[in-house]
Length: 273
Figure 1 (cartoon, helix red, strand yellow):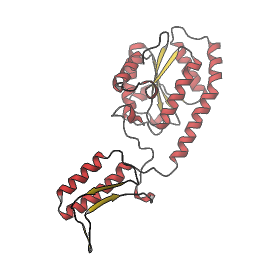
Figure 2 (cartoon, rainbow, N blue to C red):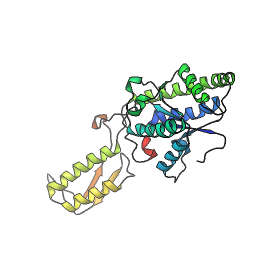
Figure 3 (tube, rainbow, N blue to C red):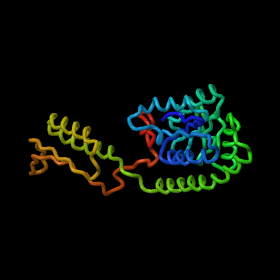
Figure 4 (spheres, rainbow, N blue to C red):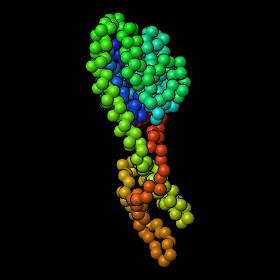
C-alpha cells in the first residue's frame, strides 16, 4: 500500500489472535485522536499476491512511529523481536521517532530482547494518553493540547470497550477444551498403519500411505481415506484386500494441546495467526 500524502505512518506489530484484533482496533483509534496518523497493520494492508517480507520492510522504512501489541500469548515470539529490532533501527535511530510496546495484561518484567530498552505503554487511560501526547509532540504539525485532549476523550471509551471485549472473548475461548490438531491426528494414523505395513513386510504399501498422508492437506477430522491395494493384513482368520484409514474423534483424551501454541512467524504473515 502506497504512502498517503500528508500522513505520518505508524507501524503496528502483532502476533497471535488477540494481538491481531487489538492491532486492528488500535489502527482505528489512532487517527481518531490524531487525524494525520496513518497506522499500518500487515493483516489489513498487505494486498493479495504481495511479497509479505518486502511489504513489511518497506512499511518499516516509511514509518515514523512503531507500536508492538504484546499479549501473554506472544510476548516471547522471535518474530516480534525481529520487527522490534528493525523498528529501533529505522524509526528510532534513523528518524528520531518513537517505538513502544503496548502491554495487554503483560507485566514489564516479561519483556525480553530489544524491548527491554524501550519505554512500554500499559493499556490504561493514563498511559495511552501519554503515548498519543508523545507521538503528537514529534509531529511537524502537532495538534494543540486542547484539540488532542478532546479527540482522545471522544475516542478512548470506544477503544477501551473494544479491547476489553476482545480480551474477554479470547480468555473465554482459551478456557475451553483444546481444539484437536489435525496434523497430530494424521501422524498418529500414519504411525499406526505404517507399523502394520512394516510387520507385514510390504514397503511399497508403506510408501504409498506416507505419500497419501503428506499430500492430503485438505483432509478433515472424521474423513475416511481408502487405498485399494493387494495388501493383506492378518487379523485372526480375517484377511483384508482394502485398507481403510478412518478417524473420528470422540475422546478429548486422544490429544492434549496447548490452545495458546501458535508457532513462530517464519513462513510469512499468515504464520502470525
